[in-house]
Length: 143
Image 1 (cartoon, rainbow, N blue to C red):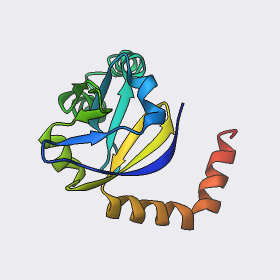
Image 2 (image 1 turned 180 degrees about the horizontal axis):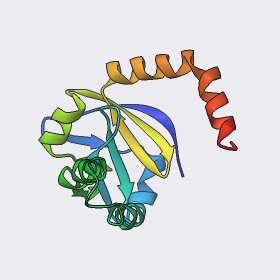
Image 3 (image 1 turned 180 degrees about the vertical axis):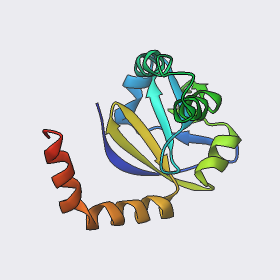
Image 4 (image 1 turned 135 degrees about the horizontal axis):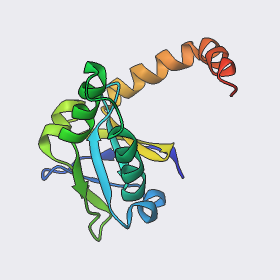
């Protein structure tokens, strides 16, 4: 399970260090792709396979389903962790997330999200200010 929030630098080769607590979960491989809300998603290989199976069942005839599948698969890249615990994320994904030199690495149970620090701060502030409304919505879902 991925938990926590970390600040990391991006080196000149486009690599970012994965927090040491997260590395074991990614040892068998990982996939990075465009996420939602302007961030990147990193999934362990097994989680990615499960998500891919669900995505392939979406109806081809529905435009929103096609768009989401395109977003997730066309931007995806396999990742390998080097001996220093770094992964090399393709430049087009850094551009998508508007990440330059620094990034926030956030653990979210079954995935990791990578954010531009300014975007993360704005998102977190908005979510925190709406926490009561969010909690009420989740209550209607049985959470």
